Length: 192
Image (cartoon, rainbow, N blue to C red; front, side, top):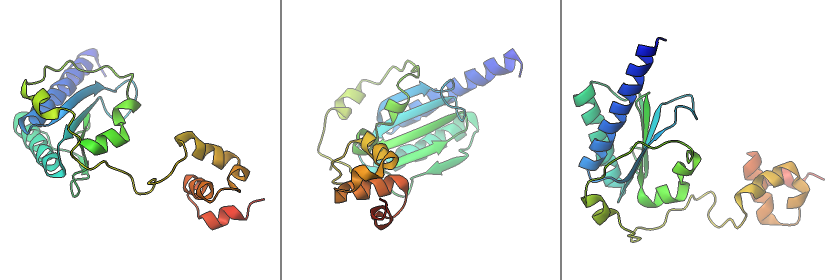
């Protein structure tokens, strides 16, 4: 690939990311960040992450993102996930991947922590963003049903996989180890 093609590709990716950000703001999405992840992952140049106040708004934002990118840049998404529920909508444009979260779901998964080292595009938020984003905790907190009630720390699951005897005394630990191994808890109890 020549340098001019690489520059054009990088400029296009940035233009696509900024078009997506504007489309998100048009539908009152907030906490928007555009991360340049090209040096971290192989599958995309930018990742845009945004929040919505509810599932319906997340779906409206996703619709607007696809419409605006198609109108302004003539590009269609190559894939999408999560539109049925609206809790976490992912839209893949190839050069960028867009994640639109219902606010409590975003707080639960903390996707941006995975890419904390990625440089962010400097975005100038509209004035209204701070008025609606706030610290409104009126939405129900999100919990992943698989892990609901689990008292163990994240690193404990791998320790149980590495040394199953740690789990033999605790039924909850048996279940956690089984989940980490993708097998049934009954199979784990037979290990000695």
